[in-house]
Amino acid sequence: MTRTVRKPAAERRSDLLRRQRAWVAEYGEEPSVRELAESVGISASTASLYLKQMRADGTDIGTRGVRSRRCPYCGR
Image (cartoon, rainbow, N blue to C red; front, side, top):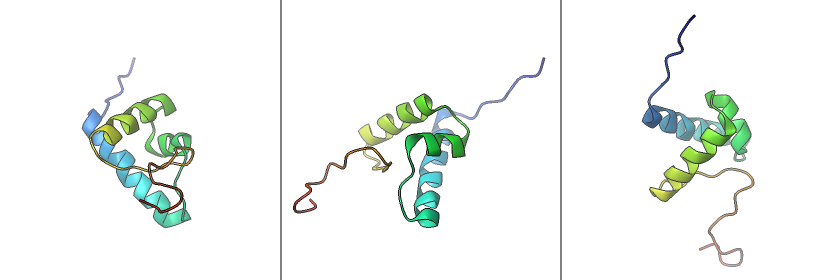
């Protein structure tokens, strides 16, 4: 039986941020949570949890399907 070595949570969060920025640079739009999770190699629910924690800490990570906190009229 082989054991899988898992990365620390902080490293997976930084992978999410790095991959999200690379995705935007490559495709010109933000990825969905599922696309982002798949590209990093984690489940969508885990990615969603990490994104929620990162947003609570003040890191603004955008994904498709998440409403922006900006005003749709003035952009602030």
